[in-house]
Structures are given as C-alpha cells and as structure tokens.
Amino acid sequence: MRVGLDTSVVLRLLVGQPSDQSATAVAFLDAVHRRGDVALVDDLVVAESYYALQFHYRITKVEALSGLRQMFDSGEIVSTGRAAAVLSLPGLATAKPGFVDRLVHASYTSAADRMATFEKAAGKLDRVEVL
Image (cartoon, rainbow, N blue to C red; front, side, top):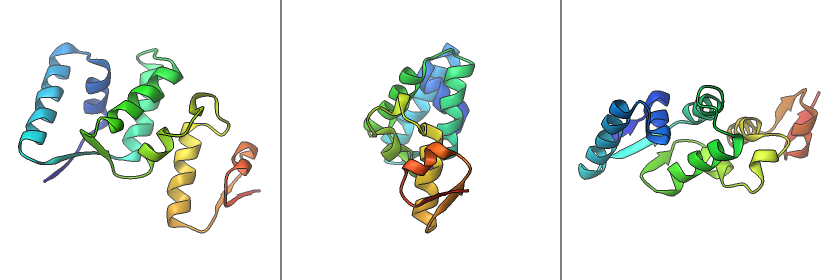
C-alpha cells in the first residue's frame, strides 16, 4: 500500500510539535514501514511545508531546505514528483530562481516542452521562455 502524507503530518515529523501529534506521526510512519508500505509526499505538500516552516515556525530557508532534503535522503519517505531531485541541487537556499520556482520548472519540463514565465530569473533554466 502507498500512503500519501499531508502537510500537517510532514510538519509534525519535521518540527516535533505539538509533541503528541509528532509522536502520533512518528508511530504512524513506523507502522507504515513495518507493514512494508510506502510513505509518499507530493511536490505541493513539499512546497506548502517549505513555506510553513519559514512562516509559522520561523525556521530559516537553509534549515527548511535541509530538513526537507533529509526527509527524502532518509529513504523513509518517497517523493511523488520532482522535489527530492530539486532539493539535492547545491546552493539552493540562495539560488535565483529559488526552490519553489525550480520545483515548478522541474514539474513542467517533465510534462511539457517549454515553460513560459515573466520571471526573468527563470530564464537561466533550460526550456524557459521569458515573456
């Protein structure tokens, strides 16, 4: 069985708060693995988590990206899209375009021939047309 984790679960796993929900999330993930099931996280959940970590939990961009990358590097959670690959890019915390823009780009270029944007920084990426 494949189980998709919502943003609320991912955040509890990453920040450990509130502690009762964090413990429940950890126990749930452990049970998933004991059954031989796979825990999945969608790119939209990764993007939501990235912003929530910074806005609600006041975690720096570097720490948020690192935590999300470690989530996939551990092998316990599998990315359903391009997030794991984008998170592995060097210098992502200061890159222009940034993480979410690169995530959108990776998604589009896997499904389309080109991406159109008004964002000049995105012009640095392959197969992008800046309007």
